[in-house]
Length: 223
Image 1 (cartoon, rainbow, N blue to C red):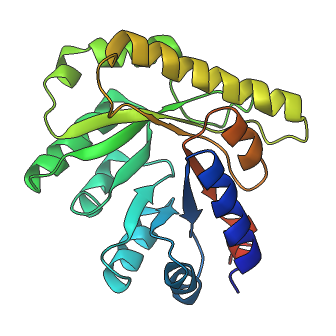
Image 2: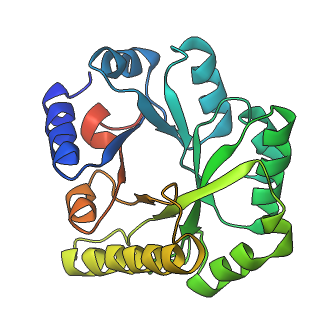
């Protein structure tokens, strides 16, 4: 069952910070997603392309689907016709493929640059210098079917709230640097995707505009 109380509480906190809840529906049943939809939730996040496409086919078409997991270039074609926002852009190669597939559907796909802000080496993402190189690259500048609208990052999986807060502050600092250097007059560059079930409140305090919450809404994942 969807935890209605948590759903209402998280939405209330997000509203206070003028942020958006991305309900992470990966591995969750259609019925749970429909319950959240009936309560007014319209933004859902998935981390696997096959599951995302299957859910897109059977659920209401006014849902705004976000791809939040690591995305392989050869899978972009399956979601390019409908995905609203890709949180996990971590290479020029991937961005080029998104641009190519979006052009085939006469769309502009919004994307976030993913940054490695955590201690775990398993996390994907740019550092600041790599991101600047991408944004200055002639190939990127020629892309007409992608729009970089912000940044994304994941904090270390830790009980250390000071560490988590510092990592979120690092991402906010990266966002501000990129905004100032590359998007000073563009209101579209305005998203900071950070914070999940265990740390979304800290993320909101540190400037998150998109929190990706799953288990706190839906309970433990199915396996």
